[in-house]
Image: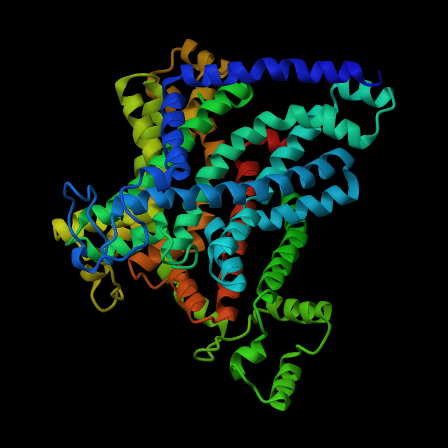
Length: 294
Length: 314
């Protein structure tokens, strides 16, 4: 009974909008292209063992650095492994790292932004000044700093990238909470005696989802770029696991033998990031008309 | 005005202290401590304790932080464990190298980005605009390390116009110096141009539809005068933010780009120090990156006040 008006007000438009959001997104040429590009990469990551023609790790000394051929469409690398196979498996690292890192950033950001926006005052100042400080570091530099302290590896790369993007989500969340807090349905929920936890969860949070979604798609793109940079420098994903950043770095030494080795790795990163950026722009236009890019 | 700058400077202090605290905390995560790092895997317990005492590592963490903070504020960030050079002098030595690269990258970015943004906005939805937007989207999505490798493949390995990597001091050989500088500067400049074009186009489109532009046109002012005196001047204010942030990031040095081109600036120094586990230097470089960003932020805020009388009045 209590706060039931608030609940219907929140949930109904949300259910209705979820379907139409996707339809609106796909009706736009740019975001439809983005959606297709990113879906291909995600499917490649999920079904890598099924679709990849070879073993990504097994060394084949007889076919080192072969140029593209019918058997190996993108040629082979310096250990005779099929480049196409390793590109397909590399999608797993990029997707896994970006998803886990952004999940870390998203959760921490939601909690910190909610506390800061909802309660305000002293705790808000401490949280937001800390976020300002964290945001002052250039992304790759901070991730490198954290990684150099924690030690190289894929798990630490996820943590480092996650920490780097906490402030972005905390700020977005706080902004939405401050805007939503003033609305009449939150006041109605409060007047009907709902607890702060209930208001935060049921009345405020559902209305903060759109900007978080928009930022997540951009966050995924950034996380993929930073992960590849870290792996490029040898501090992220460690061999023999296939990762695009490391392949790009290894491949540039063998441009004369197999040009497509590093070009393919770079293209994979570029296509994924492009897809996410197109998707992010589309989401912003569809979900948040105020921020519409002109 | 002075009051505003003073207030803004005061606001920066807690953030700066938090930045220092974060750097301190991050580098406390390093397994083992500096004393252990110096003495190696199996140190003699007595000399380890002595060295720990010398560095103050036997004191509680807050005391250690305050002492480190005190030193840092006075410009002492410790010294490199490789050659004992002070971290500050190492960074000052590399800074001009990064600064030169950053300056040329910024020039390249502005020379391409600003005209592209203005033309794109004025010729909205023409093929020029669509072309510029597609190129800028690509420039936005290309990771700089890949752009660097593509440029090296095309201009060094295939065409043989420019050296793939390296550095020559300006005094020794100015021609070679600039030949080395071009590729890294273009690598860093093109994404900047893409970002600037996007921002300037958006803010120009915002401004063009304002009443005062219509008034200016109604007064009979010519196209160019309206664009430059009325529209551009106002569109530049939001554009300044993004440019300031870009400069802030450039000053910290790009680790990846400087590493690819062996350009011996702060980014390159950072990477070398990470691989040799020279934590004091890494710490210093990370700190410089953050402080450069904060300072640029401050300058952007001040320039806002100088440019926009409405903010000044508040």
